[in-house]
Length: 113
Length: 112
Image (cartoon, rainbow over the protein chains, first blue to last red):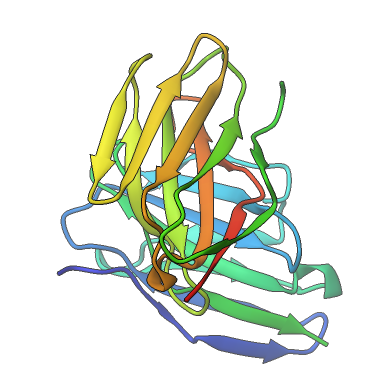
């Protein structure tokens, strides 16, 4: 059964460093998302991406964040200068249609020291 | 209601018990309501996507209902088994970009 994969599973970085989180969505899906969950809080939406552009982003998704689909298979989230408060589990998801079920990856746990 | 709220926060039941959880969501600008099952260290797994008022969906021992006019959905598990132990998340599509707004989840523990 096709699945969404994410790498790495755990990333530890120093405050101020750049990180890139990688995702491989399901191959025939057209809609891509990033969410995150800070420990003890709700899963929160970061950004949606369709047709090679951002379709919606949350207030969290400021200039330090960017997304890219560089080669038609990978979908990346870059944080330019990490802050302590960026420590969270980051989930990638993809879907075939806007309101269809979203398939989630297993997440990348980002720890900023 | 402005946010998605779930209750109870956690639930402990005995194997064989039936149980249900509630998800409340904004009834305006409704597009779809999603239920996910999330086991520790695994990907959240989609259970149901519901779009129409009065929808009822079933997958094995798990079923869900939807009331879009009053903004709530119920998830039912009949005859709970230890393998049903997980966090159950509901999420609301609030616009036309597919963005999901999640509740805080209900964590179910089924004791053998």
